[in-house]
Image (cartoon, rainbow, N blue to C red):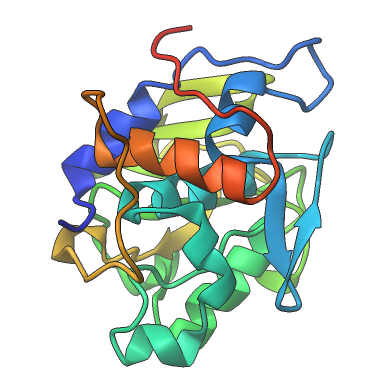
Length: 229
């Protein structure tokens, strides 16, 4: 069974309130336990402990929903276009990398395009005047709902935690505004890459099982899924 927008939103919603410990450390233990602290760069896993984590949260939770974060290492834009990958991006450390993936895979939708986003899409923002679409800093969050111009996102690394935020496209702070969307394709329930991990003798969701298996396989220690804050 593939990931759906509703299952993704339920998954990320269960992490609302997860916070950094200590505050300001960029270490959110509940998030790290679920998706790990590694991202893909130049075809290899890199460890980004203690660094900004909004991109890792958005991309990692999306991959977790599809079955396993481990599959992100196999991602390619061509593979996505051939229907071999469930997502138009890999698991990334930087918002600009997610933008580059989306451009390469044909999933980038600039705000000026008039695209109406769907739940599960990624919303990309400028950050302090920097633009991730030009290789600069940015912020990214997962779209929960959109009734333009109003929309709701769930994002990591927002005031050092995972937060649900009500937003308004017509009233955004200049220099931190939404610049566009990555059409994730989640609602299409594209096939996942590889088998869905199973956990015996327990009642868990696909995402929970994937968290346990993926973390152990990447050497992230004893991974557990904890509901609540």
